[in-house]
Length: 287
Image (cartoon, rainbow, N blue to C red):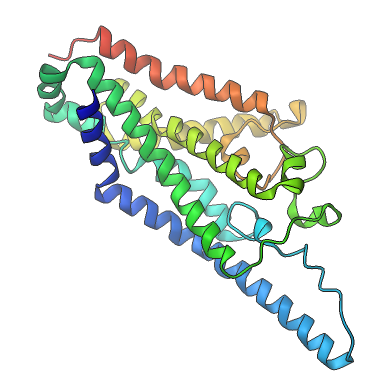
């Protein structure tokens, strides 16, 4: 199991599709950085000019523009942020979502199973797809966060400026955001990693039904679009965000979510993705 998992992880993290997905995700998030950096620089120039012209100190309201509402996950107004959190289901499936379907068609699965066993192969494939999907989401976010932190100070968010953060008293983890913003970002990165890993594994589930690499890669995107559509229809009834395309953004764009929703959807994704792989590893005949 250990050797097979190492091989699968190496294949999932050292292929050109993983590199492309991470690079493309960062390029998209870079447009968010450019806009927010320019906005911050213009604000600082205006403060300096005002102080020089009127020869008096000016309250710069430093809490308005800070790292925590300027990185791609902390703002929802730029095109870069909007596009990134719309296409991320594709970005996380591209690195390794095609692998299982491709290996079934090529006969590679039969050769590996003969040597290692069915369960070891399927679990290794699942774990590799999970990790590659989570990293394909988290790496561009971390890169954007570090880049933004290099130019925009990490002033602690001030609750008096909550309208500039989009995080209010009833928002998910709002207390943590205003008291421990770094912890808030860290928790959200973990949530995004875990969710995106599971979402990427939807491609394996789809490959069990439809033997097409294209369908396997597109299935996570289609599933999340469908859930987002359902959430929009019933939004006025529950006033709670249930669409991962929205609540995986650290800066909420609509209603706030809850830990209950997150845990329920995690359990549902585990059942939808892991259970078929276990059943296939125990009972399904591949010869």
